[in-house]
Image (tube, rainbow, N blue to C red; front, side):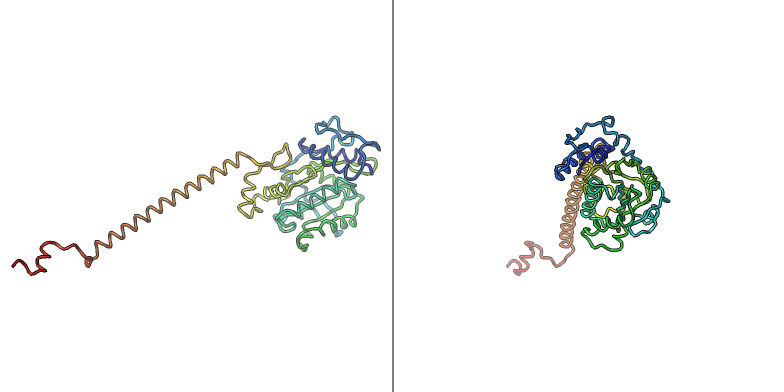
Length: 332
């Protein structure tokens, strides 16, 4: 097998330049693992991470992502799902669930398989349940791929899910095939460019898109690795906080911010310091309040004790000299 330009090209055609280093490293690892060669049958070194668009192979030029955050996906685009049923894109965005969308082709020899594998690993790591909390939607860009292939691909991934595969899970993790026009319309709406090569392979960027519950593009996650933390934050953002279930989720959403240059979420020092300041103020307020309340309670107890002593007429008093003489019968 040859890991040629049709595979290297899409890996380099990432949107933010910061995904290229990770992609090149991943491709190098794949090449070493598979024992394959680069280029046209001869071993060639991988391009450096500083490769510019002008120096990319012809197949890769112009095949990248034009981010369209906020763009609404056309609800009328029709696809055929793995069960052979015609579904329209808008049907997936009627019940308030965000979605992860991947555009691939199932016969891709390496790259798309890696993307789907890594996507499946992330789905297993998430503490959200696919189908219940969000959807995972995979669309083929190759119009020659049919329902049978989509079904086989779905079964190979959904069978490895580490939770019960309920009908809700099956409906929420779906694989599709389509014609060229529908694939192009979806790609245009996502800003996802792809091109068919002379050998029948496709060159395309490597990216997942996170979609809001009303079908708008919310975020892009680039490269071969999709940390569960990043995907979780992206889904919580897309759902506008509806998937925030714990205090930990809220802190995660608060302390991490999407970095468009890195194409991932990074810890924000300023937010951490703000949060630490808030925690400190709350702790000090609690401490001072506790001391104040404790002092008031102590004073109230002291006041009650002194008040009960004054109001009790049977309380013993010290004898006076006259009382002492009277008790002895007076002077003789």
